[in-house]
Length: 441
Picture 1: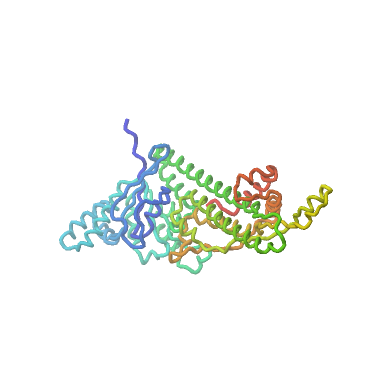
Picture 2: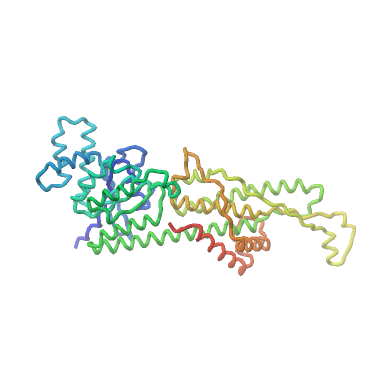
């Protein structure tokens, strides 16, 4: 018995609306297709598949953008027969074959590929730029044509303005929704900004696709399993990132550069040497943690993020008298070695550095998770230090644990070898705080 073909989902819309970027997100595939800031980048109908346990779950088709919707609608309205837009396009191509320029022929050829894809699909994802007013675009023409397709149509609002700037930017979602309502296409509207991935929106979109597949039990069941796997994978990534940040904060709190028996006249020189070594080590350590988090999401702009110019983490100098006289006196012996008095010089982290590192790693994680293009501005990284305070009780527990479990390296294994009970308590407090800061989106 021949297995049923997986559901076919087509992604359509006018040129340069983010169709290929949306497919990348749904397939979690970074090297799919070609994305440029210009119209007409996708030239042909391109097929992609999503798999689960080796079985295809669904097929996604990337299509050229619509360029002739107004002409197709006009010709369809003139026709007295109930025919499809794809047939109308074929007729238009035949009529214009002799008169059209090569550019027009190519545009109609792309239009034909897109409408043929619509005819053969199970579900349509219609991507549209909400920054553009529907009256000034071909959206009403496309809506008219899609309403005649008798397919499940999921409008996807793309390029959403940032929440804090929404009042000052053009946002035509209301007008577009009213236009879609005129054609009875409003029931499955979703939002997904391809410039800034939001996992909640991604799951909402996948849920809308699931609804559209209920008439296909096998495909529906496989698709629901696929969505569940995506949710579990994202949770695991976030959990691992939180653990990485927790380990980094613990390592930094425990790390110290020390020098014993430093004579008074050498203290200043040793302080500078130790401070320099300390800063160099924690800078390398910070980049190492950045890379570790980046690997969870395979972020394509990783190099740019790593080049962010943060202010160096600060260090604190501590002194403790540590003389041979003290030792001998403790065991009840005095001798001429009194003249070799010295002190222990240590360089340790500051609470400010713990706050800064925590904020940087949280911001980095959220940028990586959302694959945000906002991290880049004119090819320059714009992640900057910001204020985020570890709760006082958590900071205190971290600080006490660090002071009681000093290590000479930034090795997590050395930290784990300390007071196990105290370590577990600090971890629980840190993980609770971090999971609140790194929202599941």
